[in-house]
Length: 67
Image (cartoon, rainbow, N blue to C red):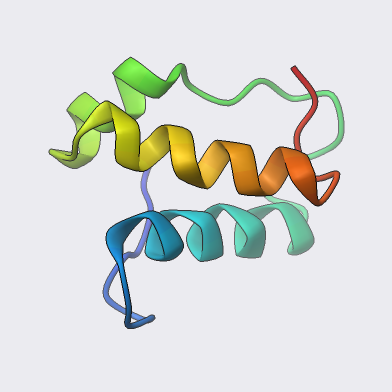
């Protein structure tokens, strides 16, 4: 999954969160579509799994993701 992490400042988990949220709100991740596993996305982005997990948890807390 291609995410632009350069646009936002702050911690990496917030950058991942904002990039995914933008994709969801723009309709590029339609309802009921699957997102990559935390391990796969972390590997693709070169980040730690905990960073991606924090982003996913925030999206889930706001109702953007359902596990």
